[in-house]
Image (tube, rainbow, N blue to C red; front, side, top):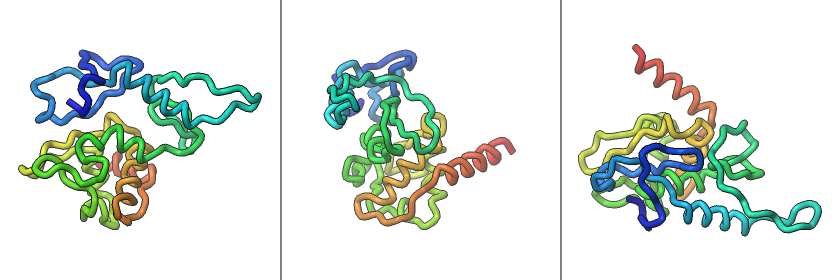
Length: 196
């Protein structure tokens, strides 16, 4: 279970307002259902985002944000988890939602469980292909670490690119950004490889 387990629920199917958390198998404690944020988490996120809003053009205060299901966005129109924004996808927020439970807020991972991203040769490689492949396909080749689940079916090209760019430019990492087009092409290559 993620940290603060009382804020999350186990459900049989992921519904309209739910965003499933990726909880690695060793930490599921035998649970087989989908782990999703509970109502308190959704309201907390909505409240925190409300604090960042500016007054509306007519001078009135903004209304409470409704947490709603993710919808695909055109590049550059923004939007993270269905919460309307005015800028591009926020890689840091996406990292927090999808990666931080394992790799930690400081990018240092957990010894014996999850590898560090901070200073990682894979993350800092000039060619981001291996890193993005791992994000899309998952990884289970090192006995000293837990299995990383694949994100190809859970995250869009824009989301993968935003997370990868965040990881490659944070915690002292200094690699080039990853573009959605790069992810899209690699996703197509992987699909071709698996159908041959």
